[in-house]
Image 1 (cartoon, helix red, strand yellow):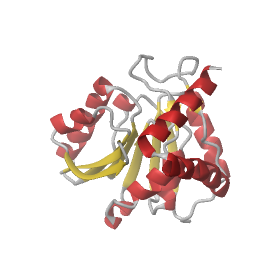
Image 2 (tube, rainbow, N blue to C red; image 1 turned 120 degrees about the vertical axis):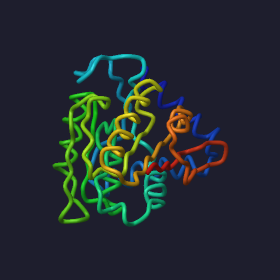
Image 3 (cartoon, helix red, strand yellow; image 1 turned 45 degrees about the vertical axis):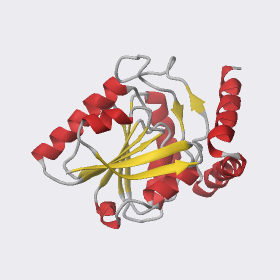
Image 4 (tube, rainbow, N blue to C red; image 1 turned 90 degrees about the vertical axis):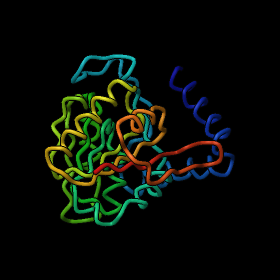
Length: 224
């Protein structure tokens, strides 16, 4: 019952913020790309009864796949040279953003999630998914985002509002430390940017903002 209420809430929320046409496009793409990519990522999953790599708290947000329309559009705003580096999704859930990123040209992709059951579903989707690029490597890691060891080849980091400001702060500190140890330019994509002030306070620079009607869909930040 609660899940149905959430679906109704997000539908009317989308109508208000995105408008009727954009909401219809969002719903159409949900069905179209799930079928086209052969994956099953359309659901809302609370973490309460899942097996977690770290402690549960109100800062760990539920799983929900971002809009396919938004994902394709914002990934295409990244420079083409970023495709040669590793793409990391913090709070990857069932893997939707990872598969879209692969469609957009990334070939080294890592999804990190705190919930074991979601990682299992992401791997099931991986087994069904046919990569666009034969050389693509996709890995899903069961780990707390704050404890994940960032590879020096990782240059694009994706967040779909997966956790609150305190956890985000720690993850950004880890990213900054990685850049300090291995200097490079990195990009962070932050959808549904509830805590964008954390990026601003940590010295990240805004390079692109996607606005849809009344709603900021996402922001691309850089740091070097």
